[in-house]
Length: 274
Ligand SMILES: Nc1ncnc2c1ncn2[C@@H]1O[C@H](COP(=O)(O)OP(=O)(O)OP(=O)(O)O)[C@@H](O)[C@H]1O
Ligand SMILES: [Mg+2]
Image (tube, rainbow, N blue to C red; front, side):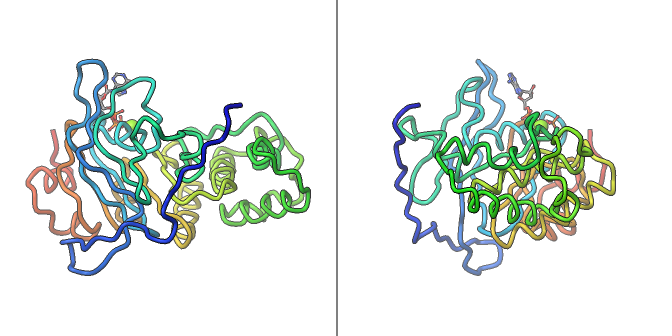
């Protein structure tokens, strides 16, 4: 393994801005400036500037192909091998889109949960401890504690506490997705990126994921792509609407859904689109 290079984030001082949204002070966990993504010659995302408030949920909405996943995946450098990503992604005083960032180290701070639950073919507890052990954590008691706290935070503990040695693949889809969330939390991240985390799930499992996210925002900043507008309206504090690779409008969720400013957004949230 390459020698670990520590990123020097200014832990004390997240960026501070005054939003023009409602004139109050907001702590910014992550922000993008002129973020632009090309797949080959194709411009898939144009100059997106966004500021994500700490301990809030921000939803990214828009039609299929509008660039939501492209934007989200760029935030923790998941697009590096398939796309050219220009612009700045500021996190605790560092531009994490710059070439000299240790991407693996950065991803401990900015984790990702995908649409399809992707647990490892290992036991429930091994799913959570695997990466920690890779990083050299050996203390059994400490590992057990992290398993329990992560599963509790992901609202899965009560369902699996007597079966931690059971294969993760024997869990239901909704349980697997909460396990994957627990696995992400175990790394003690700051920001969780989620790409349609409940779209492959039944309504009850999806509601559980929503409840889980509402709890998680006490400790994490969450950025979530969703196709489900009711979900965006229910769970998110802020909403960003994308169309054809452009960020069209970004505001408090209640404003986006009750009095958006841009005609395209009005049409989209009212379902008169395309
Ligand atoms: N790996 C890739 N290579 C080439 N083009 C891509 C790639 N990934 C996405 N695109 C293109 O970039 C554009 C934006 O895609 P993206 O996946 O970001 O949309 P999305 O808003 O997430 O859509 P969906 O709601 O269907 O998931 C689309 O035109 C898509 O075809
Ligand atoms: Mg997508």
